[in-house]
Structures are given as C-alpha cells and as structure tokens.
Image (cartoon, rainbow, N blue to C red):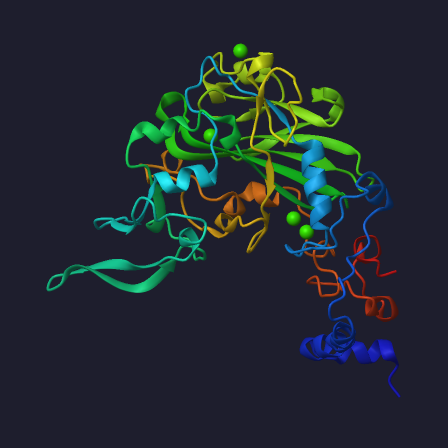
Length: 401
Ligand SMILES: [Ca+2]
Ligand SMILES: [Ca+2]
Ligand SMILES: [Ca+2]
Ligand SMILES: [Ca+2]
C-alpha cells in the first residue's frame, strides 16, 4: 500500500486541482449570500486599521480592499511642487481623456485615427483593436494580420496605440488642485508586509536637453514590514527606483506621510531639495523648491487648514487586470502620449506595464494573492498542512497553519 505522501507525488497537477477544488465548491454552495472570509492578516494591521475592513477583495490580492484604502490614506505623501519654476501641473486620467484623441502608430506606414476627441474614456480606452499595416506593389499600404488590442499584448513598439493631444493647451495640466488625483496600488512585498505605491500623473514632461513627452507617470513606494512599521520609501525618477531612504533619513508630515520633492518639468520624485537640485538627471539645476504654500496634500482632507493645495485624493486602482473603483485604464496596454524619435520622447505606458509596478513584490513561491491555490512551486490552501507542501508564508498570508 502506498502512503498518502507518496501518492501525492504521483497525482498529476490537474487531478490535484480537482481534489482541492471540491471542498471549496462544497463550501461555496453552503455560503451563498455570505460574505467570503479573507485570509488572515498580521494582527498589528488588524488593530491599526480597525474599522477599515470591508470584507471585499475585488482585486484578489489577499488584502481587504478597505484596508488597502486606509493604508494608502495613512501613508499618502505631501508633495512639494516647484510652482515658481514648473508650468506643467498635475492632472488625472479622467481630466486628460476627453481632451485627447487615440491613434494607432504604424512605424513604416501612415498612422491611423482610432478615437476622436470626446470618445476616449475609461472603457473605450481598453476596448480597441487595430490591424497591422503591410505594403505590396499591387495594393500599396493596406491592413493585414495580426490584430493588436489596446488592453493586451504582445507589445510591439512599431505597431501600437497612443494618445495624442490635439494642441499644446493640454500640456499645462489642470490649474484646479481638485483634479490632481494620485493613483494608489497596495500589494504584498518580499518582507511579508505591504507596499503602498503612489502614482502621480502629469499631462506633459518638460525635461532637460529636450527629453519631452506627452503624458508623464512618476511614483514613490512606501515599504512596510510585516508588523506594518515603515521600512523605508523608494523615490523613483523616470522608472529608476534605486533611491531608497530609511524613515530616519527623510522627512515626514504628521508622522506617517512622507514628504516628496517633485522636480521641475520631469516630475521625478526626490527625498529632499538638495538631492533634486544637485543631480545630473535634472541638469544640475534649481529644480526643486521648499515652499509651504506649494505643498500638495494628496489624500482627502489632508490639507486641514495648512498652507498648500488640497488634491483630489488617492484612488486605489487595484491589480493588473482587476481594476478597482472604475479605473479600467489600468488595463490600457499602450502609450499615454505621442510617439517620439526614441523611448525617452514617447509617451510612457500605463504604470501596470512599467517594471516599477512590481517593485519588491513577493515572489511566485509566496502565497501573496494566492490563498486557496497553487503558487507555482508550493501550495496556499489548508490541505497543504497535511500534505506538507505549503509555501513558507502560507500560515502568515493565508492562515493555512
Ligand atoms: Ca485587495
Ligand atoms: Ca491591491
Ligand atoms: Ca517624468
Ligand atoms: Ca532648489
């Protein structure tokens, strides 16, 4: 007779899935109308975010969506804007879309119009398809296979959708701070804690040496340990997030909100004014300013009578393919501005398709976002305890102990 452990080794993966899904299906059939229970989170988080939980996890990352929003609000930055230097103000996706057109870039053939002004929105942005262009002696330029989609790959630099501003008036962004939205992203990190990521959106990047492009996404990421204390903050410049500061080596507002200095025109994020002013990245220029009335309080109600601007709040956009709060734009696969002569002068792609999105993300062998299932090399369901093939964090992340 073969022992249970040995048997398991020879069960094909599909069979395992069936065996493991059966109890879940039975459980679900009894649980109709009952709010599903979320995986256990560290006790410290539960205490600190008491009253936040909604018992909903629509972006399926194993973190209560209410807790995600509370974390985002708790660590939302105060941003020093260089207002006396920079004419390119922040904006939001919803502010930009009605002002632009969508086109399709064919590298060796004339571009095509896709959506006229007034027709670009959260849904149309991610539901377009367009065919490649070919050339032949008898047909000239004509559409041919394959078809490209605005919400999925594969990525092709030479055949892609992009948004285009009809004129330069939109480049200045919005002069109403209520239009300045910060896009939030919370996920499990390699420390067994959470990363709270903040994306700033500007209509235009007016960089040194002519590195200009339409559409500009910049970010910071607050890295939390498993006990929810702050490990540090990544300040990113044009996708380079190698500037990491421990809590003691940076400035805080109200104890939990990091101060960020935004560079003139490029909107890169710095931990202080001097590192911004003294870097080659900004042309060794006076690129940042520390003026209290130029502070952008990014979270709802953050300004609270202080000098500065009250922004439009932090919206949790969810995970790749699973948007929250109607932010379908996170599925948009292509570019936010006109195609330039190089990657540095083309509009950037959506944050979900930039490497920063997965900065310090828990690895595939982690149960982060995989509770009840298979994580690539180990399991995150309750059965893994008896089978002895749990991921190392199955207990802490999913309560499979
Ligand atoms: Ca979630
Ligand atoms: Ca999330
Ligand atoms: Ca930039
Ligand atoms: Ca300065």
